[in-house]
Image (cartoon, rainbow over all chains, first blue to last red):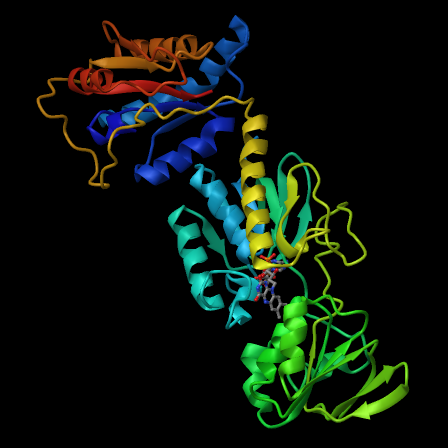
Length: 72
Length: 387
Ligand SMILES: Cc1cc2nc3c(=O)[nH]c(=O)nc-3n(C[C@H](O)[C@H](O)[C@H](O)COP(=O)(O)OP(=O)(O)OC[C@H]3O[C@@H](n4cnc5c(N)ncnc54)[C@H](O)[C@@H]3O)c2cc1C
């Protein structure tokens, strides 16, 4: 969040479970974070499951990145 | 599981506002619903006894301001039904919401005698607020029904206006010897123990009550009646939650109960406040447990907060859109997840390489040098914060 405040585009990768906490922190810091949300958990996943998480979140990340860069 | 709120509090009296504030202080998203205004019973209390909080309204302002400053949203709506589950569902006057934890702090209903025509006389002689309605009975006789500390205080307050105050005590009085002395010393107050009200008199407005004692029944002409007995808890509000004989609830799982609404509660401001604090802390603990006891650490923790002046260009930054980095919190698989996502972006934007930074561990704050380096050197940083 500090990075965003310094002008860096900084998407935060967060699992659903931690989303509320991250949002609360963002509110407290008065920033509107760019969030890439993935299903919980991440730790303990095998390679195939992790690939599924990446697959699920990639499109949103690319859309967000393009938008920030002014490509969309 | 994602919910609309981490914690939803039903009732914004002293217990609910305290629970909400404690949970919000810990960064949770908290809503506190009240069907009236925040404050609950406190709103009615001109003088607070056994509590150092000034007047009721002063304490309400302080509690509400503290809750709002912590980030609590006050929802001005009645909660009509609560359905427990891993995400608790609440039906409210404003629609349905879900929450990870619910704190029921709905207090008790008004005192009632359970007599025919009683409801029709509420506001027409029957009241449960001496501070609000006492002046209406200036120079007239009133009766108070109850046996606890607050009944005694209400009677003493009414004695300031009424010509005579009869305190009808159904069982043995439960007030302190000090209050008994003050009642005895008040010339216009009479205490009748073992007394039950069996009927109400009056057409349209109250004109008297029928009182039964060991000596038999008699008519007591009064213009005002203040019942503080049979105050019921919020039984039936939460599906499947057990209640005691007064309708006060026993919490279970992620539905907590605080303040007067809780079975066995002491019914005092200090107790309700302590209960609220305990419930707020229990809510935080329950949510942390479901989150797998991992703690979110804000990578920016420790840096001074700034006003929301919007993004600023990093001073001296030479970064362009080919300068993209990953910043991991070093939790298991977080780096792999970031690398996977980074590769997609790398392919999408045809980036020659990606920068990389890592916190030593998830439980320490990001060091300032790393943040400085990232913000000078990169245009975009993909950050792993919570997993
Ligand atoms: C006459 C009287 C005098 C008292 N004087 C003192 C005193 O001097 N000192 C002292 O220590 N204690 C005193 N007490 C006791 C003290 O006021 C209570 O113990 C305390 O206020 C209880 O707080 P609470 O938050 O649990 O409930 P409450 O203050 O009753 O708050 C409950 C709130 O929940 C809301 N609510 C209820 N149901 C719903 C729903 N379904 N949806 C949305 N909102 C809902 C209500 O509108 C209310 O605002 C007194 C009590 C009485 C009756």
